[in-house]
Image (cartoon, rainbow, N blue to C red; front, side, top):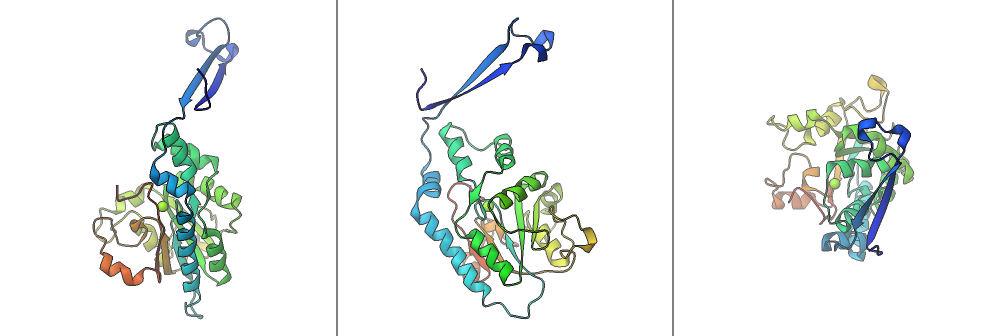
Length: 267
Ligand SMILES: [Mg+2]
């Protein structure tokens, strides 16, 4: 029985393209996949996708961050705002919702396909904030734990969302094997710390820049703000080690935290 709770996708296997031993019959074979969409979506995903609270909180955090830009010293050079991507700039709640509606969770294959679709939306407030950073003469470093091999798709998704990123104003750098290996060293606490250090010392390898040593990213940068939805988007901090009392004075000044009840390092 087919209802509106079920999606179908049919695939035809042309006879001429099939190897003899793979033939299902002497006619074109057809397979049909049926997905049951009747699974209830979690309250976390409902909140992220449908609540006014989520919209107001995220836009409010970015409003606060934008106000903090105006307090930066006017003579500051080479300053950069470090931002996470997922659930910070790009909104992937549609992916989460789709997976849950099928009764499925995250998988690396489905996630890679989602990233490659370049269809993620925008977190409320993110675009206006990034534009304000550029207007104030700053740069943005997007340090994401999306796989580095997917960086071109992430870049295209940002462009599709009309964020005015260029190789000069924005450095995108996904996670590589070196980032995962770095956490074994005492000076790197979480898997974004190596990239933050490379940004500070001018050795970061931005995926969106082919300029090499001539790039304006190949000089030391001063990190003025860090923005993310995960406590590990902040330098030198892990979920386990995070000291709430120590973080609190920085929150709303140099650290900005967005809500994400769907997933995180707290799981
Ligand atoms: Mg994130």
